[in-house]
Length: 245
Image 1 (cartoon, helix red, strand yellow):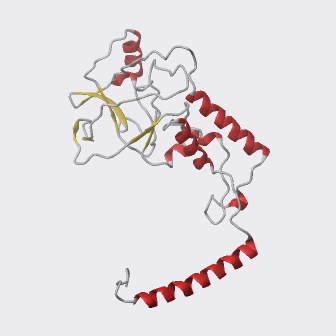
Image 2 (tube, rainbow, N blue to C red; image 1 turned 135 degrees about the vertical axis):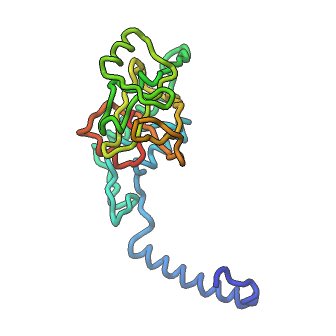
Image 3 (cartoon, rainbow, N blue to C red; image 1 turned 135 degrees about the horizontal axis):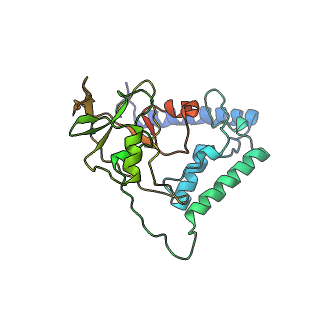
């Protein structure tokens, strides 16, 4: 039974047991070292390399993992020294990733960046009026009722810069998840960390496309990436609750 009762063994018996175990463990360790040598040195995996750079450069959101070749595995473990080789390609990739991390950590000019804020209404969140999955997957709503906007309607609203702040974008998971919402107008002018906030609520969709409060909220993750399409969305879809913006 664990943990053992301290009173099960006397102090003398405990000392004798530890002495016997120590001798056998040391002998087994010496035999292992004689046969295979001490634990070999190995390079950092790409996850470890990214985490170390985040700590050293104080960049908690640094994302350089995908710049590095995927680590090989042995028996479903990617930290085995035998398979963590360092080829010329590996070295070039690690150096390039380190350079990119340093560019993010070091100021790009003499003056600090000017802080900018952009507010995007619902009708600027998607470039189109619908997405994969049909009307049940996405539509615009106001006062919890669907507003049937077409692509032409959105184009006119954006051309005239006429947006209703009460309009909402209703998104529901479907077989075609994830969706691709490329915000209209805004583009990041340089690499770096950007803070994005969403105002959202959990709802249920009824048959007439009206909205009602959800019984339970469901967590949803958001991830920014380069523009893609349905043909390259598999790597996003396998992550689960991911929204491609």
